[in-house]
Length: 280
Image: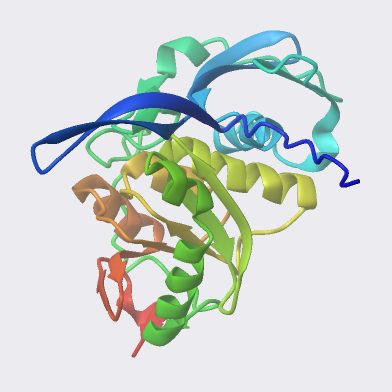
């Protein structure tokens, strides 16, 4: 007698009855959509934010968000992670750090998905919040060439990146982010939000104590200035995406010494800043 195998429900997707229209004909069928659910993050019993996300890797998302916003620095600070409820993550740190007094006032709604937030010290015009003169990258910045890539290495990485996008192939409704070295993908995440996908990657880095200085960030979606701000917290110097950067992301990348590669599809790509790190 064959043993019945119980299939666990994939909480990342929901099955729906839909009407499909093709060539002027209607057909009742089943389809799947990506799940969107709220996650509230607490730091030492203070509510930080509620994110709309894909219910997967929530601990990594919470830690990555706190790291990206400068509220935690490393794994050693973390005393306990409580995730008893699906819609809440509570992070307790040994230092019992509290939120800055002006935290809610400095919050900026970004151009990203699900009202992603960032507290970057760059203004909307790409200037330093301190009012200091912007650095001239050709004059003041010593470019770090610790990481360089050939165009063929980028092609190989992006091909491997696209093959990992199982949830996107099922639903067509998520973004992806990954951390890689020059040869392979080390950490991969998918989420309905671009910011969430990036934060999940950084959260996993924090948990696994993976440093970003010699790594590359791969993205499926737009490179905006807030995504750049998150990436530079980990010391990354190369960001590669299938999609486009924004003008402010390019301007800030030139100030911060980051190489931005957009429209990396097939054998083509556009390098928007510091092309010295990309060889043919």
